[in-house]
Length: 366
Image (cartoon, rainbow, N blue to C red; front, side, top):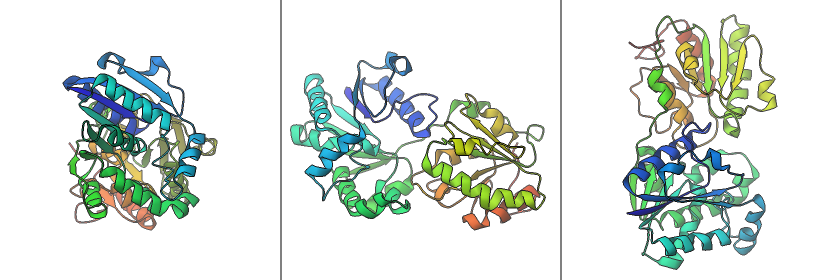
């Protein structure tokens, strides 16, 4: 069986972004069960030495796009244009993709991430049903649009809804990361073909995390995530201003650890006696072992949050907004879901060892 894996990002085993790590795991699994080629459609330079999966696949192709490539797509179809779904599209790459399929006779083309889904139009136009198309939707884009406060949301809401629906219906199979997303797509886009929830593999470092009463530092709070993502920085700054600092002013001896790649200068300036901004950490296990509480105070975004799954897998009590807990199955013993204005109250109760709900949160589980 021959497959082509198309991705807008470079999949890496220890990539700072959780989605890129997940794509790497999926790619490696596919390479073990088929003859696999990879096409990377990137906005940034890809260095050959950074392609960790080279030995696992037959061929790696790289094509580049820029933000300026959005302009022809907009001018060609202004009433159906969606920036999110056209962000990696260029007609020349669509032609190149079809030539690859024609030359290598792939049985399946897998389009990883919504940014690549637009190429399904080229594939169907050229090959009809002659090639199987599998899409892996890490997020439902219309849900992302509904939650962001930007000009993009105002101008392109309807177009994103219509285009995402049309693209998903071109796939033979749509893979999603949670049953919540499967239900959402079924509800929003009736007529989409086979939907399958795929398992999420967690980082290897979690297997080495050993949380005990001796490793946990009471009052340590962990904020974990790729800091170049706008929604993570937004959540962090709001958490510090409205929750963390008020708790400190009331005398709670808390310390916040911001662990994740590419913090902005604004975030770096938060470094103080009470706040530690680490930047990228090769093995963040020690921060998971010493944390007393994990927080996911997200205010925007969509899709299952791997950061939440990862902290729960480490047996770390987590306080999350409903958005940060979307698609996460839990029994209530470690994950405390509440609105952002309840965070201060919930964190204080966990710190003092008081039950938050019927299932009291604990600092660690044997």
